[in-house]
Length: 249
Length: 292
Image 1 (cartoon, each protein chain N blue to C red):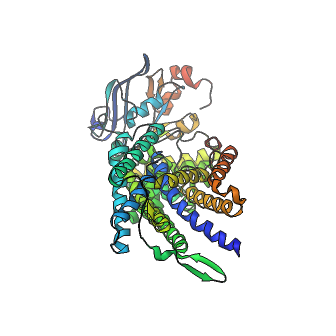
Image 2 (image 1 turned 180 degrees about the vertical axis):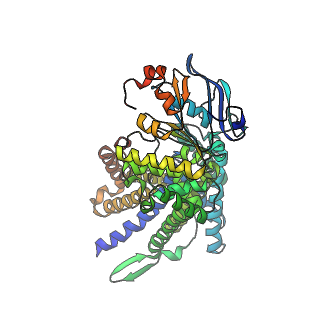
Image 3 (image 1 turned 45 degrees about the vertical axis):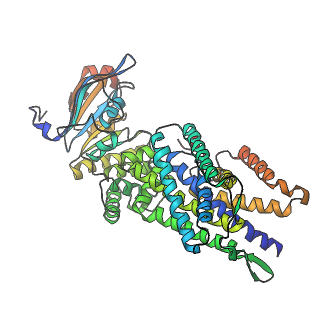
């Protein structure tokens, strides 16, 4: 891979030697991870491999026992979640839906305001983001009246409106049907292309991960067992044994 | 004719209950605090009017609004902000403590006996048309309530802080992640609840012509009932609940057998219990399990 010589440190999300213990159980064991701008990095592994815990460490919901997390050279560990999001580290949640009682536009505006935009500029930017995600005609709809796939996309639009430098997506395709997952794939690829933003993607749908990601990191029992391009991961015996099984990828 | 008369009574009483319920619902929706000290905001507003008796009406009214708003902000800053991360039951108990504290400070200063105050008594006169006698105060209560509600709606839809408050009411943690400033959103909510409470004070003092250190207690109970009927966390629900309780109270007053009328509130609360058995989550809030 490129950027191994430390050039990436200038502009990247970097995790080094992170360890998290839950009452004697080692949830994350010495994980290293680098996410660069414009890159989609897939994070896969069986349930309990430590994927969500790692995202929690990145976003500040979990304090690691050891290790460091840095964004473009800035140490993130002393910072609270909202301070990290202000620096450009934005997360979408597995189970958290957009603000149900607000319209799609207001949801995305709430994200735009987080960047400090004034009301008018925020509204214009929110409309633009909705357009990019194919939701322009849904702007005035209350989110809880939208189909599930579109509701999910509003959540992503809200995150994108925050102009993230790095976007962490926790199972964005969970619960979506195939057509909606297809649409999501287009959306995520678009975010990276438009915004020079790096995406860390946790996802159980392997076809989606393998088509979308530039690199894939495989976790098992809290440790990295493989890291490489989709082709390399597909060919990796330990990964096949640990996780992919006979699943078609 | 008597039906129309009762309806106007019901709507005007309901509008005052709705204002009180909105004040409670606003705070609850944002920080899951059931603020029983809201009644003391109403009560202190009454005492400001009492203390300034003799001044021009506008001075009395504006002073009440300003003092109550400052008191609401003070409650937040001194009592509830340190408990921001506490559980809802802890917050509830804290609000009782604040409530008793304020009541007893007023008790120490002004004593326990209700005191008369001449405030807007001219509004006790009635408009008469088509055989109806409608006290001016009732008309004004309805108009002022509607104006405040329209103001709230505009504020929540059109202003930046208003949208942020609605986002915080839906999901406080997520809103914080979006950079919504918790201190500011909560302070604005308390200020608004103070303003709403002060308008209830104005109505109560104008209507009864008395103030007492207990005057907020009954109102806060009814406002709480109203916001539960509408659905805790829904502002539209709180307003709706206020109107429903007003209509039910006036109907019972009008149609209960004469000898039962003194016990009107017992029937109101009996109906409330029946309502809770039927729909414990309130009218406008979906059960959490309906949405996965």
